[in-house]
Image (tube, rainbow, N blue to C red; front, top):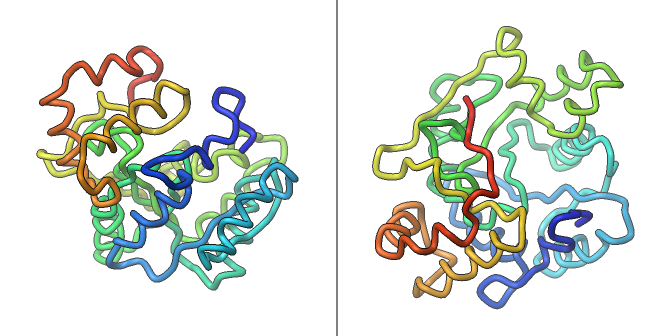
Length: 235
């Protein structure tokens, strides 16, 4: 929860519940995942996250604050997970269908890494990425201890070294493709936007990418709420 731009954001209220709980409720709609687990840090300020997971009966691993890669590996290992879908808690509108598409594509080709967070993918904050535990363990073994970015951003080493891994980039269906839209929550303006979208939909926990894009088409002024704050996607 140590965000400098928006402190304690994963506990900010969305549709009447903490952002993390809202995201978990959405991810419970994923059809092909076996388990939801949360990886948080040993920092005292993150105790409310583990407390919330206890309340929701969601497995929660508490690990290193600095080495996020090691935390992911330990969380997966402790929960007997060998294929990991990475979803950040500040992406409350992650589309369950985008996650299912990753899982089904993985089952067909069994790559080390697959993502739909690309230029021809989902809006920022609605897609996901998947890697095998074996691939992350390989990253951890070969990434230099001084390579802070590899240990902080979990799957960045794979993206930066595609020659060493079997990588698949998965396009979003054309009707759900618009990477000019940003609904990940990094700034207060992003939180305002997500709340506004939720207020305009009768069942926000069931809102999918098509619903979000339709809301933007019908209410183009919403784009101004967080305009200019985010860099465009890069493949």
